[in-house]
Image 1 (tube, rainbow, N blue to C red):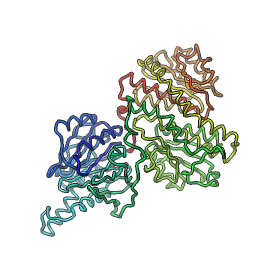
Image 2 (tube, rainbow, N blue to C red):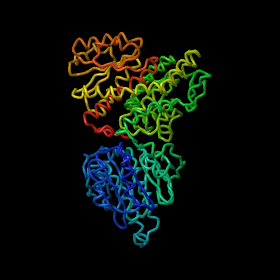
Image 3 (tube, helix red, strand yellow):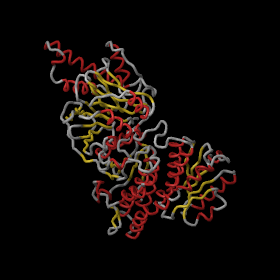
Image 4 (cartoon, rainbow, N blue to C red):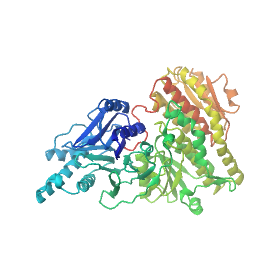
Amino acid sequence: MCGIVGYVGRSEAAPILLDGLRRLGYRGYDSAGVAIVNGNKVETRKCAGRIAELGKLMAERPPTGTYGISHTRWATHGKPTDQNAHPHFDATGRLALVHNGVIENYQALKDQLIRDGDTNFASETDTEVLAHLIGKLYDQSIAADTSSNGKTKAELPNKKGRLVEAVRTALRQVIGTYGIALVHRDIPDFIVGARRGSPLVLGVGKDENFLASDVSAIVAYTRDAVYLNDFDVVAVERDKFEISSVAGEGGNYQVSKVEFTDADIKKGDYPHYMLKEIFEQPGSVRDAMRGRLSQEECTAKLGGLNMTPAQLRDVGRVVLTGCGTALHAAMIGEYLIEQLAQIPTEVEYASEFRHRNTPMTRDTLVFAISQSGETADTLGALRESRRKGYRTLGICNNVASTIARESDGGVYMHAGPEIGVAATKSFTSQVAILTAIGLLLGRMRHLSTSEGTRIIEALEALPEQIEEVLKLSDQMKAIAKKYASVSGLLFFGRQFNFPIAVEAALKLKEITYLFAEGHPSAELKHGIIALIRPDLPSVFIAPDDAVFSKNMNNIEQVRARKGPVIAITSGNCAKQLKGIADDIVTVPKVPDFVSPILTVIPLQLLAYHLAVELGRDVDKPRNLAKSVTVE
């Protein structure tokens, strides 16, 4: 969840590292730091707080040098303090290291280092233990050769190779996850990186190279990237790099072209990334479906699934797994696939799936859903599914991500960069893709050509309908102002819109920090009604569908107990809600299987405007980071 940036080249490293950290600010903002090698010293600047604080520190005392590493932290081990901020050093202070991940056996490693006489620890972090371990192994290698060959340290050859070997030896002792980058004072123009479970990408430039947790940090400088695999170790110099494995074997790699540009990851005229990404949804939903709907065959074309029609026809059960917003998209996917394809479908929390013995039949197809393609729990679920021999497909937004590379096939979302921590456009893209999957599987079973055509027409109409819904932003802003003093909200929905109630509650919790819960409307009477009171509004997602009258009944029960009601509805149902709901928000009437893509958008806007009204940091909500790469 932390962000790493490294640079080696001919330019001053400090501005490049600081710019990269600003672009990775969504990955963690508890503390930040840089280490830049300048001759015979390592200049370090680090502090608790946002990257802006580090920027001030660096402006006061600018570090100089043409290679270095940097880090923005989401705290795991140790409080967000200056001492716990990265980079961390070995016992000699000559080796500096930054780390994303968790070293699970750090205490055992630390205890052994202490028994060996190393007691010079300055932080509470697991990262510092790894720095000490690598530094010790490197120094032992140098000392052994100095003793046996009678040479001074300055005379010893291949210091670079010895440092890489020290990294390999240390990582073979590590239990846990890591994306690391390190420099050593005695080895000029040289950075070592490695990954397992935490993303790390090599940016390839001209007379300069980069390391980063995400290509968004370096896309302004190069669009040529190598996405490292688990257990890769990379030695990076100005004009070359070498990739090998932790075991010492040669590594396979491919230089890829980054699909988006620097302009794509800027806010433009929007005050926040979240608002920008909400308003990008007409395009992101259109791109999710582009080239994937066949009017001629009345079905979806998803060649990336890497399955023959016969294999798809034999699917007898579907399991959808994910975390957070991706899990809520999966919940809608369950309704979609069961209704359109009549295939039993289950949704599993990725964190639970990998640790419990879920009964699965041989004809089960598993989908792992993740915006980043790097979510630790979802990646673990994917690996567990494949380990057990089930065909496992991915739905993600990063074609070079670990999930994309390790799955048996899948569907790329084409949503473009999503920087805001609270997921918005990735959610609607995921739901659109799951609808296409339901259509594909359904047409192979019982859906007629006319039904297939109806579904395609509904999907193709969505971008323009989303444009209409976005015009509700001012209304949602007014509602946010009206309820800015409440302590929380309840959300209710039925059928396809029950998961929207859960997702809307999550959005509100993420960026306003208010209490929020999402429930099936019919569960109101089974305990939740005890919460109804005048200062706790209820939001009902009640479009014009087969269960509208049931939703109306629940709304009447809330009103009878003086609970304020905000209704998200469609079609002529707004007339029936007049005088019953306090606030009525109307979206276009659409078939029930695509309605979640429209009903969620006003609720994204509600959460956004309420957060702004409350003075929250919308794009960097407290305690959260965008890509959850640790358990």
